[in-house]
Length: 276
Figure 1 (cartoon, helix red, strand yellow):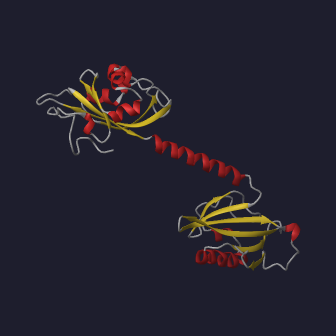
Figure 2: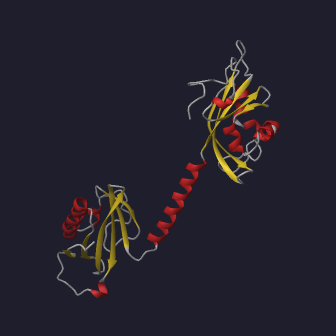
Figure 3: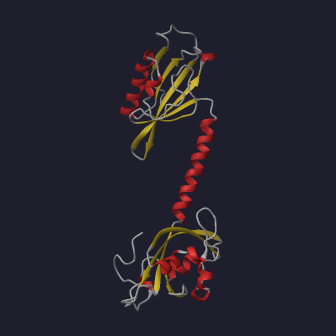
């Protein structure tokens, strides 16, 4: 977040006599004792208080139910505005959570405090505190993490063997290792390095076909470890119009497949993709 001194009106300046309402961000002013001098509507909306309720609360009101990211309370001495007044230095990028009694929700803020000095003085006579609402970003990150957790729980417990690849064929995720593969965890490695030579040709052909057509490619393989047959489905993973990678699903089909002549240590065969 940019400093309020960087451009535009500066309420921290001794010559300031206007209203905080002109500021694009939520803000309030503290005097040298840490008492409230002024606030703007954007600040009151974040706190869920009227102007009278906010300005009448004093330092205690500002810090009512104010917590850190770990949930521990902010003390008055550690509040960014108080620190700026005590040290004479800017305090930037602090994260704090306040409780909004109107919405009955926790609001997460980035808090910046800038001290101001009278000409010739070495101690601040007031401080400008600006607030930026970080709640939407934190909620989106939490929802994404929850969604990824649910998806990971599904894939980790799926009977299929699942690989996630980038467009260069590097492994981004693996849930189970096929019998006979040479690595226990191949994240970051070329997926073809997992395979004995006889299996690499059909796998490479399938990969190149998905790159070219953005359609699923199927092939079958017999593992060298337990001679079980797997049907492999290599599907495109897109982000909008962009091919972000591929997902490989390998399903054990040993019970419904007739034995075929092995190709080296692996038996392998390509077959056309299923109609889409």
